[in-house]
Amino acid sequence: MPYDKDGKYYRQPTNSVNKNKKPSETTSNKPKSQKVRSTKSYDAQRNLGLGVFAVFLVGIIGGCVAIFNNIIESAKEPDEFDTIYARIWCKDQIKSQLKDPSSYKFYSAKVLRTSGAYKQYGAATIEFGAKNSFGGMIRQTAICDKFNKNGTDYIRVNILP
Image 1 (cartoon, rainbow, N blue to C red):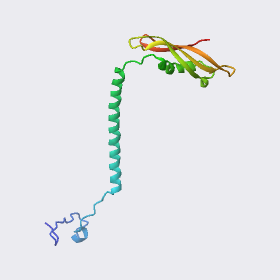
Image 2: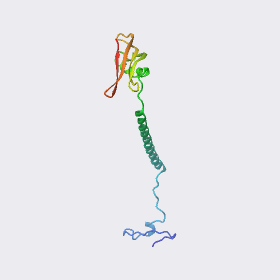
Image 3: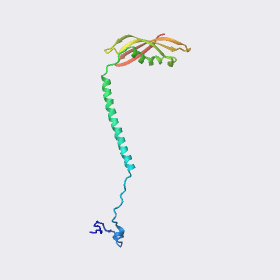
Image 4: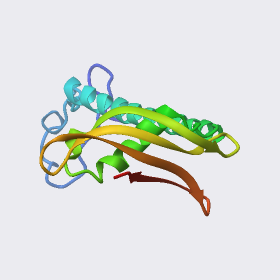
């Protein structure tokens, strides 16, 4: 077996092209330089992996939170139909019937009746102000009903003349 003077093994060439050359010309005692990855590319790959892992972890946690919130929401009792409920939920229905919806101004609400196991249905009168066709502010009254028909909740608003 061919060894150099330091006792390191080296392989002699076996092809016919290098037959006449000395072993020192074709082989070297020095180790071949290995390609070293730059630390920048390694750090970039590492950061990318951490980023993907972080997004995955946030997705898992967010999904769990959404599922638990959905369970809690479905177990909640429905909101009671009161003056606050009537003011908030009937406002959009009233504004959709006005000549100038941006001029809507709420004054008061009064619950007339409630029904349902949790008092979630009912009727209320809502006093409000809005501009008419001539641009004058007038005070009006609307009756707002929340009811259930075939398992679906509806809100109906009638503005009184």
